[in-house]
Length: 350
Image (tube, rainbow, N blue to C red; front, side):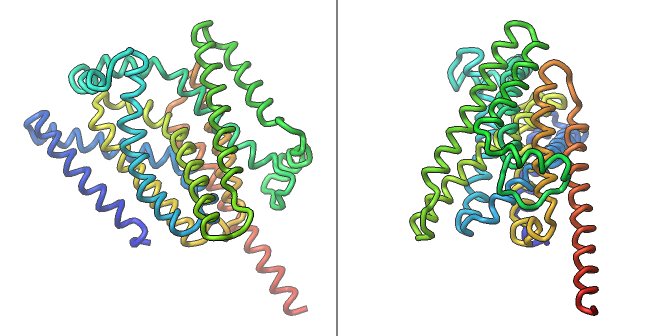
């Protein structure tokens, strides 16, 4: 197992060393340095707990990808995840919301962190709308599949599969949830939420179109590369949607962009390593309901994002819901495997 996580451990050591140096520079005391390191560690744990279901979903997609693109997701993808979503993305929010340039946004984040936090927090409704709609489409696509052969919760999944051929049913459900949520908000927030949710829907459709265009008709080398790029793009947008709640939740602990980047960056790296571990060990194939649990967790996170626009749900609860669903799916898979083994043993002796 260690060989799959040594890169994350090394990355964590470097980041914590930087965090310790930054804490000493900021406070000039051992106590101040340790407080910064503690916040970095808590943020890393927060990111991992919120994104465990992300790792399981990523693994379900990566297991069918070319090994070269699997590695590119771990290397290029982590650069996008850490620097793009944990540093650049919050700055872009401030640039758009405050109508300022990148230099001013960086100066605001470093010299006026309280104002920076306020601007990012004000964008909360839009972020939840975009992420909730995109993740809702991802989760519903898995269950509205007429070709899906394995069901975990049969009473729920079998009826959904039967109506899967009805076009745009997933879009209709997401739009209905978007409208219902908007009625709980003020007029200004409702408009922001609806526009952002439509943006999430459009982003999902664009990624699906790209995947369809790049999907290889034959398993030639060039076509495999195109398909790998399409899946890579899909995973990056998916990861971005998962990261919204982590970035927003980080401001409950600190409004310092550097500390947030260090803590969430460590967590993002471990999520990537966890994804590769699940793929290389064949965990998703061995435990048949684990993928189902991950997509139930995605739908739960989508619903939580919608609810978070008008009622705050603590991040610890969000993380626990995903972990519990995946844990239950894992246990159901173990029981199913044991039942299959007993059946096979009985048939062998009959």
